[in-house]
Image (cartoon, rainbow, N blue to C red; front, side, top):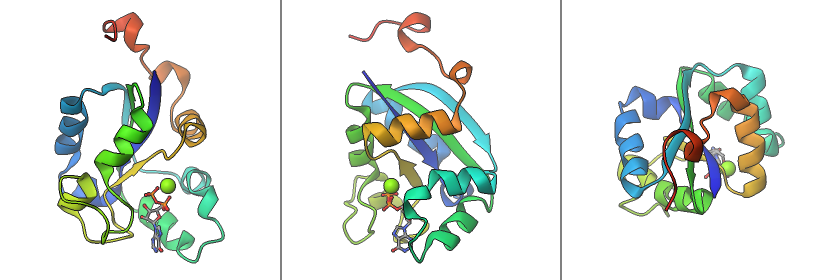
Length: 147
Ligand code: IDP
Ligand code: MG
């Protein structure tokens, strides 16, 4: 079983896409085990995007992600990380295919609606950064058995 950190960015929240994005993950069969709506503190934004600190767009990225509320979630499923990444579509809008979240809703590289962990290491790091243990449900213990 795997968990991934997913965040609907300020543009996705403002465009009213929270419900659609949750539906896509629910319909696919991933299980929601944590969620929160928040305006991101700058320190959290900088830590979250630490791997991009030296990139020229880092300042704009942090400014954007802290500009208005985001919707942060943890989803659970077998292979949740790669399944969520394929549902999101590629980072570059030229490559994000129709049928994916980015491919259906966006043409902007910076305002690309959604973030999702890109590896098991990132997922562990991001989940721990955004959620405390007791904000996350133990799915099998509280909701039902995975089959
Ligand atoms: P990802 O979100 O698909 O994992 P990353 O390469 O980790 O993509 O980049 C993080 C975010 O930074 C992207 O989602 C995008 O919003 C932004 N970004 C990436 N590359 C650029 C760029 O060249 N210019 C402006 N923003 C960028
Ligand atoms: Mg990334």
